[in-house]
Image (tube, rainbow, N blue to C red; front, side, top):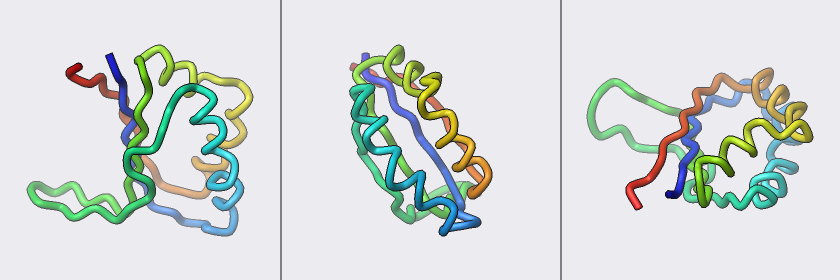
Length: 96
């Protein structure tokens, strides 16, 4: 079953965030992931959720997404994201 990582983020330091933007795609691909939505400004239709930017990644299975999140080679990149953005991240499995 496919799995999706949904990231809601506000970039607070774009200069510092550029390294993350440049390097993270190769790590996503290495774990079988791909962008479904990449850094777009979403439009809120209902409710009080107002993400500034959104990224949605698709992985072939939950295990692949979890391996991506736990990969020791990209923890430094995650620290960059944490220090340069305000972000929320969820993992959800798909229906098929």
